[in-house]
Image (cartoon, rainbow over all chains, first blue to last red; front, side, top):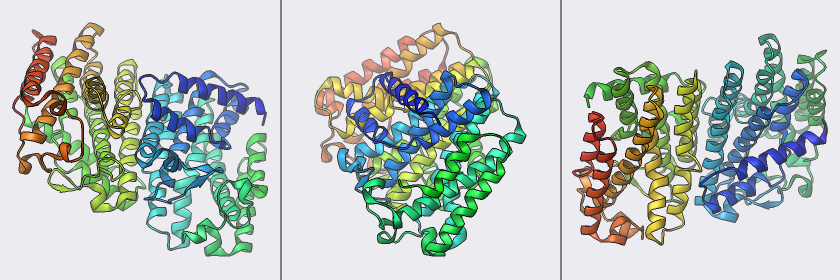
Length: 282
Length: 282
């Protein structure tokens, strides 16, 4: 859980952005605005720390994969915030991308981030492990994952089953893919991959439940956007389906299942992050 | 230039769409609506015919690459038509995607098509040739290509140099990439690749010039959208910069440069398509 990994990630991402050729200056500015808006970098850190734990060190390629997954996450936030989706004006205490740059550029910044992420993934493929890692991330962000999850969100969720499906697709798949990609890069065997898949899905769901709780009980200045926005936007959440107390029990149970799935493997970063879901403030 | 290649392409694309797992039914419907709206399939046919001419046959992987590039082209049309971009209601004689499905789903259908295209490209990488082909297409559609070209369009073009830059990035790069990817798949040498790059860029520019001419002189029922839309939308075109007659001369000259670049190579399909730019009706 070293801070130096985060610093190294930020520096690698800056280098990658500087290397983009022929890009329109306003597009680059808009992409960087959202990339550098102070996210927690959970997905890249999951990938880097998983590879580090299993291989004993990180290599250059790990960082390129980590940048790709953060770009995908950032693109999804830009598009989710658009007027035709959640219509949010504020994220991480800053105006959202379309408020700052206009809707047209915001849509293109999202497209550009997704495309650049895929270019980075393709550029890193040199054997079966790197190909599996790239395909794991690409599938998680696509129509079998995040994009379909967002459609559930746009079309309104009506049942507990739809709520779980939405969060599995929209949030958990990409988080899970960060861990699995890190494991593939470190050439983990399929038995370990399967355990990490269970962990990743549970962690992703716990992350979403804690997000719903923060929207009700969080501190606006810490989470960087207005509280109670889900209720205001008529969004179905764990709390609207289960009530506050039951949702907290559900979170504890989900974190426990996550921890059980990697018990005894000595994956300290993953354990710490799962426990952190119980005490998130932002 | 056989019609059977087109039929085989359509059937392969239907198969690929059927194989998509866990996709939200409305997302699939929206993606298929635009994919099956009767495009000319110029990019996939360029890829398939280039590989066919150089290798003597097409293989299964050629068709997957061809589907990927058509998905990228289709996604770009969906996003370009959005109210925040060109705000077009009609394309190919049908309501545009956001008119039919709403803006939120249309944005996600575009995202989904781009992501699926990249999954297809990644899935086909098995050696240096397939990797080069995938990276060529991915770079052409991204921030060093099509996405930056669209930013020029959104921000308004003020000079002839910007007009050329916009069309090189927005239109020519992806068309060029179809040819180059087909050539890489057929393991063409770098000398041939360089000739085809010149051809592809000239063909792409010729395609855009003929598009501008169709907007002024075309038949609405054939081109599937209102004529004079560029003037109505205050778009800079070859005609607004050069006038009608000079634009026609420019088209002839560009087609000639394209043909010269592949003279004597016996690439009949490419030659025919370049000449077709002089007599496009849709």
